[in-house]
Length: 252
Image 1 (cartoon, helix red, strand yellow):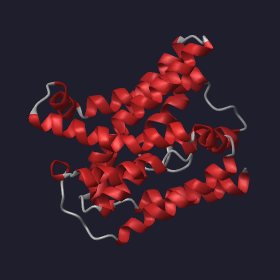
Image 2 (cartoon, rainbow, N blue to C red):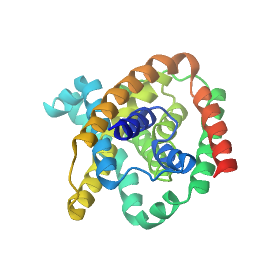
Image 3 (cartoon, rainbow, N blue to C red):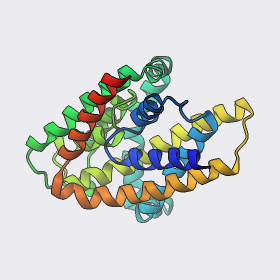
């Protein structure tokens, strides 16, 4: 149960903080000499983070579900932004799985992620909001999300960075990133869930503890980042990723 809670905490915090959940779920077990979470745990932890983002952005989700004009527009943008990652994920699934099994490659990707995040400190401050987003914006952020299929590259970090390039404020770039993550997280959970069904594995009480921890910590991570990012930007997270990546490369 403690192990499931630990993986839930790692998944919840790193899914939304720009420090790469995929990288931590590979590197933390490698550094601790443990096996990564099994298929059942991984699938259910994605469900926990999905619950977190849906609850936090319940107002926007309600707009989409009730099919208001604002909700329809947001839904179209999010679906368009999901296409690049969906296409690349299906086309290069084997290659991404290969990278996922090589901690040194993941550590290198995490280090590069850190450099990119730190470099955003020199970008001019934007003023745009999510409501002003265009199809071009969401395609570019979708491409950033697709790059994050590489284990060690942060999904939220890459999408927030591209959002900053498009002139969004830090808080609005993060908000757009989290909204764009809803279809991505749901899709990843669905794929892992289908693999889980095929494997015939069951869901234990311990895994449900991990789901709750992932949901609670994920919600806290979203709230924390949205409050902090306007003051600090992404540079502190970039420093963390660079240090963590270099240390991981030296150890693994």
